[in-house]
Image 1: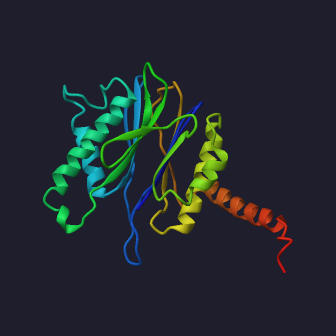
Image 2: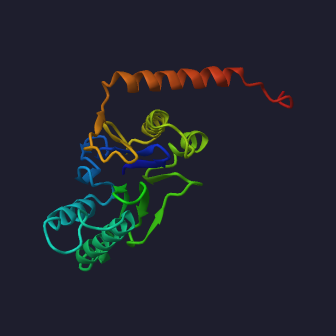
Image 3: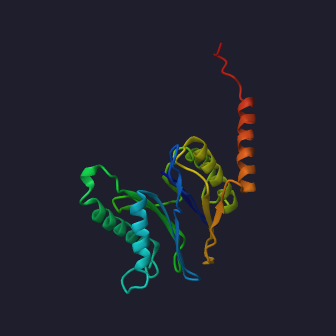
Length: 242
């Protein structure tokens, strides 16, 4: 399993993904789930992936292989909508290829992608591409998208994130969201890959990896846990409880 979250805010975009792909008492593996396609000064497109690892790797490999061709690819699509459509069609292509002869074995070849970024001429945009190849776009009412094991990290995001949330606060909220998920689900784990993009900058992408020794992350998770306990202790008991 995995957990990925992305936010489209007034100030820009924030992407984050864990790296765990298998979990068990005797086997834990890690693979990066953040994939960057960029032309500095002209476009940045980021993919976050969750689901069948063979499927997601095949989709990303095909998208990269086709960059140098005359056909439509992520370096020449006109809009982020077109980019989401291309990721969706490539996903359908891979699933149809791999699942045709093995579907009866009960293998789930499905995968989800978050596709976001900015192309010159339009504002930053963010999409969730479903296993069927269709997709939805983040909006002002819901300025974030999650894929994978999202339920444990959703409450803090719902309470904090608004379109006008600064990127630094969004990053802090995201790390708390990951800490809550990691504490409750073995299938999500460190390191966490994060990328923050300022709207209109088209600067080269510089992802940051947060591991178990990261001092800020450890300070944040400790402060959050202690703060929750303090607030909980101050809450009144029910007047009907005997």
